[in-house]
Image (cartoon, rainbow, N blue to C red; front, side, top):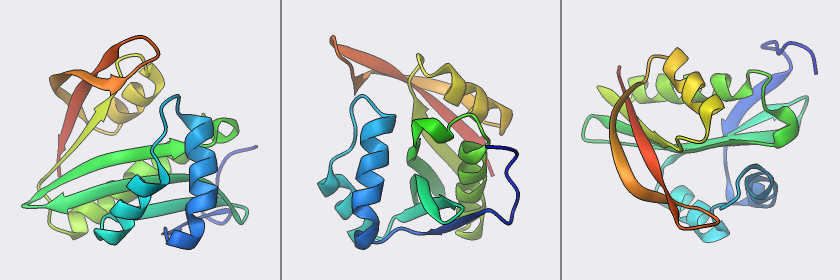
Length: 153
């Protein structure tokens, strides 16, 4: 996979029809993936649910909420073979743009401290650490804290 151009990828709204692709990526990308029910609830609730396609194939997704002047990134996941090629940056930049269009003043997200690659991506986009949620994420042994990051929009 060479460098990504604006002509070989597209960001489109996620629908129920897309869920088999989304679940496959989610299960490959995360040790503790979301269930189909969680994705269905997000779509039903009118959350910002997006897919990124590369050369016509779904390779990742991003989900966020916007309410009361704040935005919260809930999930960004890409197929492992597509990680490290700038797709995560493209998706998060898209979510930031959507939050701005919705007049959010601040965007929040959680990230595992062990996910250094994601942490560095968020930091490079202007997110700053503002807190910790103890025992937030499930882990193979016990639970893992979440770092809370925020960015003023």
